[in-house]
Length: 370
Image (cartoon, rainbow, N blue to C red; front, top):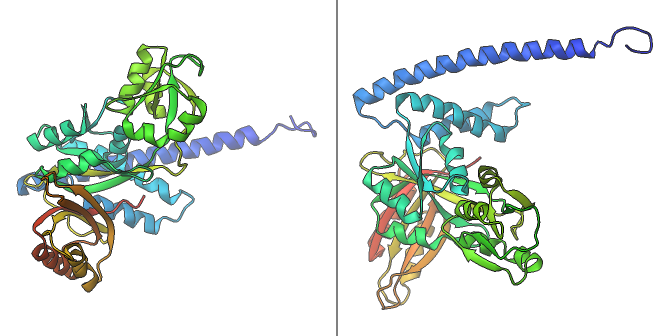
């Protein structure tokens, strides 16, 4: 009742709004099922034509197109995760994709995988990056998701080394804000004998660990989720992992967001077998990755950069790794902006190939823009 003795109209307004939302939800469900039926028709055509189920450039174009026409109030950054789930559910009607990533459940790799492919997939948990490459190469997984670099600690060296000796190609990328949390079975910092995490995570939390747990052992394990799993079995241990891992293993969050860089971000690439999943066409926002080496002579590295400058092609990454030949030779991992379907990029790559002692194109793929 209000001061005049009349009934408060707020509950009736709320009920009316809820009824309207329910009506919209029913309408949405009908539209989603119409979309799913159309996706099934597309799937049948693809089967007859022998076309791949998953086309990353097509999905990227759909999402970018929807972002460009979004009238609001739905936030622009909310569109990608919503539509990736919709497309994932529709795609699974054709055939659920098998996707390999560094496991167990609760890793940032799993989070990146679900963010990119949606949840309507078959998850293939792997004990190491080597296993992700091996299972994907063998066809036990349709795609693999591999961390390639971190904004704090730089490149994931093992991933770069594996690219040198694999036939897998890169068809996509995604990036993830990484929030490291200290997790433990007991809700206390007292009595921790060791902190377990992937070596990259331990390095990314160096300052916090030094300030708050000085002298406590930092023990590297295969993944952050594995560290959380082990911490769930021993009350003297703590792990550094995601909230997802903490929930998965029933751990307390002793300290949230302990990474040294508040903007800590990890970039992942999507790998697959080229013979079964053709390279994506140009999407308009693309990256091309390659590995090269040069003859051991003065000015050789400079010669690598000349074709890019000549054709006005931007380079977004340049990393070196030892060739392990004993001769102080190096492989260079390069990312350039653009796609070989673009004449300037094609010309630059042709000249770069001619100037290189070794040249391997890892793939061209849509840039992560969400």
